[in-house]
Amino acid sequence: MSKSEQTYLNFAKEVLENGEFKADRTGTGTYSVFGRQQRYDLSEGFPLLTTKRVAFKLIKSELLWFLKGETNIRYLLENNNHIWDEWAFKNWVNSNEYQGPDMSDFGRRATQDPEFKVLYDQQHQIFCDAILNDDNFAAKYGDLGQVYGAQWRHWEKVQGGFIDQIENVVNEIKNNPTSRRLIVSAWNPEAVPMQALPPCHSLFQFYVVDGKLSLQLYQRSGDIFLGVPFNIASYALLLHMVAAQTGLAVGEFIHTFGDAHIYANHVDQVKEQLQRPLQALPTLKLNPAVKSIFDYELEDIEIEGYHPAKSIKAPVAV
Ligand SMILES: Nc1nc(=O)c2c([nH]1)NC[C@@H]1CN(c3ccc(C(=O)N[C@@H](CCC(=O)O)C(=O)O)cc3)CN21
Ligand SMILES: O=c1ccn([C@H]2C[C@H](O)[C@@H](COP(=O)(O)O)O2)c(=O)[nH]1
Image (cartoon, rainbow, N blue to C red; front, side, top):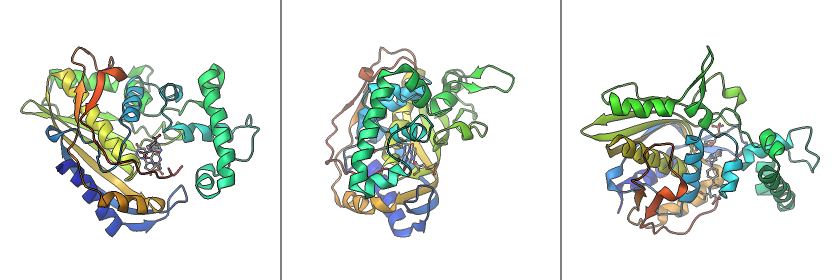
């Protein structure tokens, strides 16, 4: 049995039991707590949940997308990753150019009205085809604004020019591992109005001791059922990659939250997941021939020994 997965399940259980009902931006309603922290010892195994199948290939392509400094969903769609579609789709259907049926409040209506869902699926398909095949359309509507990739790799300086926070932090870990300033911030108050969704995983810090690298993330807002399993695996993967590139062993991933919530329409799914038995955690294999944090491709990252229970579907709140 894995301590890491039990840590996540205990957290979900605690929020189900103690979360306060709280209205939210999406109109869905949540059970929410404020200020929590979990620790995952990565030497125990790779923290990809086994009590439901978590699509690791989506986590990989999303993280490589951030690391490339990309903010356009075209790269994700080319890799069959649709987790960010809704936030780009919103820009299109709210534009003057959009001529199709009314898509206002599509996220909520698609889960509640089967007839509307048919219309939404059609428009979503048209949207994805256009992003993939039409360069101008992709440039206009595929871009999520100054989101993670932009802030990590090209933080815009007031006096002109850019800061590559990832390159800097990897160099600092190599050259100055005792530093207490090993921080990457995605939270840029000036950019918030230009982002499809202000960064949920807002800031992270590295720490080196005894030849081991740890990472703590501050996540301002966490969707415990859908987003958090992705976030845990994504930061564990990033930690492994940075450790590999700096010659360090992996230590802990520490996950600190602001508003951690379970959406009201995820409660049954969480209860089902909590009933399931845990399996051993998988292990991560990174291609040792890769010599830069920016050179990893999908095939350089493999998960081995992953034997999860079947996936549990849930609607995403848009
Ligand atoms: N409400 C909400 N929750 C999130 O977790 C979230 C957002 N919004 N907005 C931006 C990103 C997108 N993320 C997402 C979006 C969808 C899934 C999701 O639907 N996951 C499914 C499988 C999807 C698939 O196989 O294509 C799952 O079962 O994990 C996960 C993370 C995380 N973020
Ligand atoms: O990586 C992510 C991205 C998003 N989320 C969740 C957290 C919230 O449920 C929504 C964002 O809504 P806000 O109103 O902007 O907080 O997306 C996540 O868990 N992980």
